[in-house]
Length: 268
Ligand code: ADP
Image (cartoon, rainbow, N blue to C red; front, side):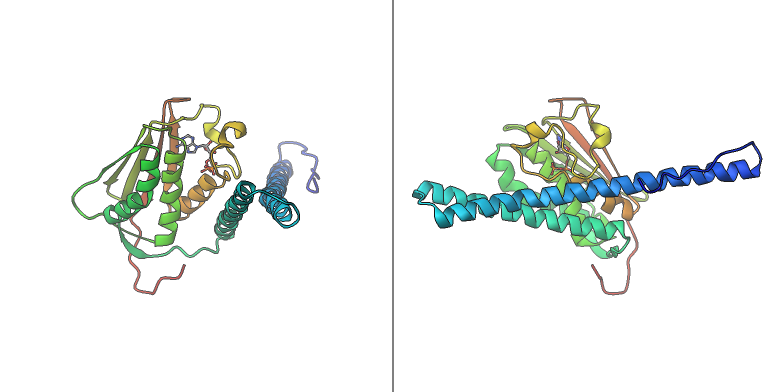
């Protein structure tokens, strides 16, 4: 890298300490730059892949004599890949805004129970298609927090989507929401594929997907959890993911602080 310069660390005196601090900082900067490079190269690869499919399929539609089935198949593929590109760009935009600290933390008044109800409604069809039972547990009292409705939706849409994507037919997903002193704790438990312990530490890395071959059948970009973590921590919350291992299900716990009401109009 370009930040490989190190200074000699001589002696135990103050100069020696300064030299050591300098070297540690240089090392941190170097690894940040390497991470950024890997991110940029992953990003351009991930953007190029759907584009290539779109180009190939549209050329075929234009220049080849295809039967009606092939026609339909290629059109569907183009549509899927275009959607994938759209999601990718949306996720990347949001991620880069959070990276730069340029994302306003919204202050919409949100009742978590009602929010959860409307999220579940959105996922009901996906669950029914796979015969997955969706359970919810919450108190009867309203649970109020202040956040951007958009950010909250991105977070819970991602974890709910994962729970349904990685749970085979006939399984179940249980979502429980409870209110504590400082915030809300959401526990999302599924009976799905689970995650081996060696993969748990990498879940929040950008573009990371467990076993790319296995994940290929399931659509996704590997950006979801990275984005979820950025949003949750920007609000001062936390996320942890546990699994007893392959085929033993996964539990995602999110703590989200109540936040403060704000008189000003919301900017997102
Ligand atoms: P993706 O777009 O691939 O779903 P995410 O960042 O949301 O990306 O998740 C990263 C990876 O973590 C997934 O590819 C999957 O392998 C694993 N994963 C996430 N949630 C679950 C879950 N509920 N059960 C099993 N594996 C999961």
